[in-house]
Length: 185
Image 1 (cartoon, rainbow, N blue to C red):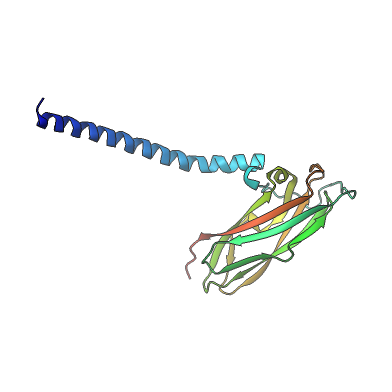
Image 2 (cartoon, one colour):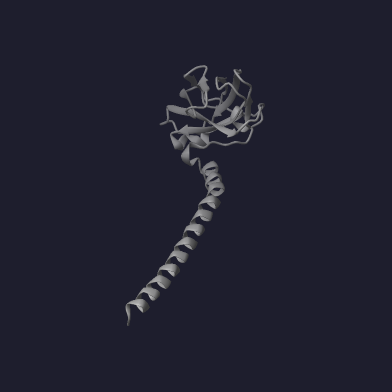
């Protein structure tokens, strides 16, 4: 076999390999995008990744308050670096009775100099507590539009389900605020 024939057959084999690799790459890119909604559903159903329910619970729900024990709920917040947004809880922790409806607030300040549209994503740790942490009212249920230099107090109303294991004495609720849409002014 001549060197020209070897070169041509190698070139054809390389093209076939490149085509196959491109197809595999395209398939897995599409597969990755398809997994995002499925992953979100699984996290909401199981409480994985600290996700909690996003379904509003009626404020007049009948809940048995367990006054025999306390659970400490800690509040954290994060926002994307460099966007000029400051998110913080009004209080960093509180003791609650499981089953009691609890009200607290987060304060957001827009220092970006422009309109900001964002979405808060909640996370509860430990993950085993997430199914027992039920938000009744939350600013995370919808996107928030903040005017330039606006300061807003945003309520969070929640219940720690009395079925929470007695071995869990502390729950951490954390919000990360992301930019949702580039606002045009």
